Image (tube, rainbow, N blue to C red; front, side):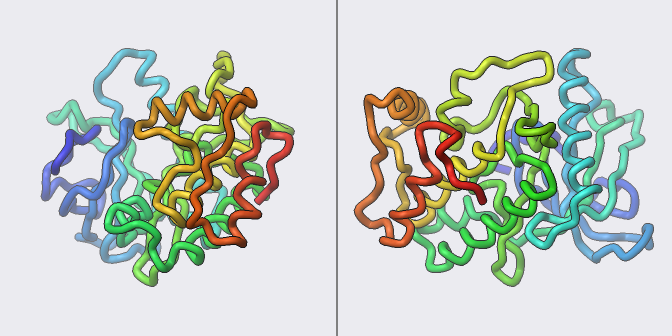
Length: 284
């Protein structure tokens, strides 16, 4: 491990029929580990999987309630949506280990194991050759989500997983929200580089922040520009500078900074994803 994990789990730790082998990734609200199957289990289970541990054992009551909500969101989406461009969930488990308070009661999602992520691919080198094909598959995944009445809410390269055959799957649905008419309600935070301007200053109510499918379209536009050119479509060397640029763009005092290296076909599409207002944005 090169960074603190939200949920530290030692190698060899067992939950259900699974034994933890090595860490794969972590975020602010969960950590993912590669695991191998050590027993029969229920139904057709693979020999290896990714275990996503969602924390529970410690924290304030408000934080624990929030974490429980995030876990419930992700489990609900996995159970209701089985689509070829969404990472598959095999089962959910609850850790029963009173002698380990940090893990006792944690929710564990047993997920299809990927070989990597778009974030890792982009870190290895800009403008990957498979970029256009992966973007098409990401768009398919978003369209599947939106048709089913859900908004992803946190699309970014780290949440696009790459499978053994090189294809892409959308993952990490704890920010996902089910539409109620034209809007859904999502927790009041996301990755600023992929947040549309209208949400940068939106109010957060008791149910969270109102979000539309157009937020995913904006995030896709940013992700696509980064994948195809190696640069963000708004200027700035750090996220806070790009956030300020997004605010200026929304107010009409600055424009997009599309790279000269952007292919012509995408030069026509991305401005329709990255409009100043949600109402002008194209759909998936």
